[in-house]
Image (cartoon, rainbow, N blue to C red; front, side, top):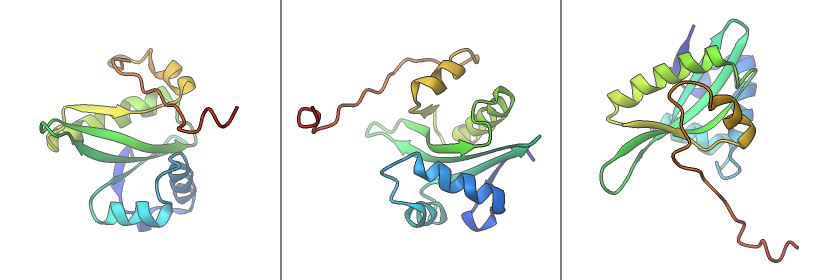
Length: 142
């Protein structure tokens, strides 16, 4: 198996654990029930890479901007080896193919620096945009 689009109820016991881990990477996901509903309603997509003892679970969504520009956004991801170069070449090739079929022009994700440090050497990735965040209560936290 390379990369397969599934529904949450189709995950096996090991994959379901990574599904919950992926959801936990987004503190604003709404939890497993909300994410599962969004997938079942076709508003998000669930992908599983399960090959050569590597299991990665990816949750994506198509974002349509006001001007009509579309991109496939990797919203959540977790797995047994999320920095496996081979698995990510396969994953991203197949996600890009899906994105094109959906009228999307780009695959995007927000990642932590340690993940970016791994992917910056894979052909095609760039840091054209960098997301920065500032907590609204940062002055109160000091």
